[in-house]
Amino acid sequence: MKLIVIRHGQTSWNEKRRVQGLSDQPLSKEGRRQAALLGRRFMREKIDAIYTSKLKRAIATAEALARHHPGLNIVTDKTLNEMNWGCWEGLTFDQVARKYPEQFAVRQKDKFHFAPKGGESPADLRKRLTPFLKKLVRKHQGQTVLVVGHGGINRVLMGTTMEWDEEKIASVFNKNTAVNILHVRQGKSRLHLFNCTRHLER
Image 1 (cartoon, helix red, strand yellow):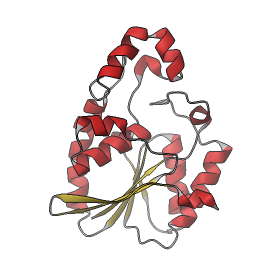
Image 2 (cartoon, rainbow, N blue to C red):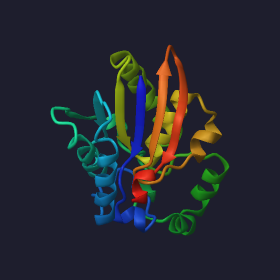
Image 3 (cartoon, rainbow, N blue to C red):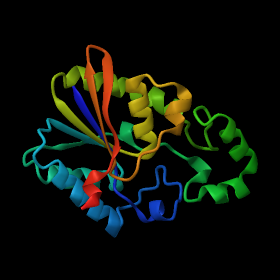
Image 4 (spheres, helix red, strand yellow):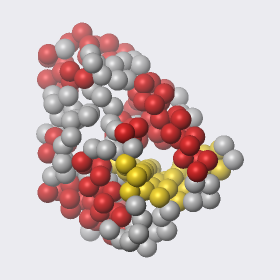
């Protein structure tokens, strides 16, 4: 299976560096431009399935891709919703450090297992995503599958597929509409492209 993992386009909260999580922010004007360029990048790519979260920013990005593939339905799945940041959502990390200094200090020591109050950790995401990934591989052997997700979701999805260690998973960063390509075969995965945004250079 060829697995293409893409982060959604930019939102106003991305621009302001606010923690989004489950907050259902739409794409900004810049985000819509990014999504349109992303769609053109994949207009001639053979795609067998598109999966996305149920959040507006991811769905709008997936729609920009599907526009070039008539007849291909988008499958929305809450499993791909971004990590719940609990009481941190809507804040910048500078604001979090001032408002929740004790929680922030704990996270700095172990980003993979830490969950803000009322939220999730990357470890929680791995538990959520592992059954989804197994099902995806079984269902789409020999096919090209495109997943439009989020920063937190994508790092855990790729890290689980590639069997990265917890520290690496927690530290990976994807730019808006960044493209990652993995090949999964007989239980082994290879990373062919990472964090690529060449479509935005036009």
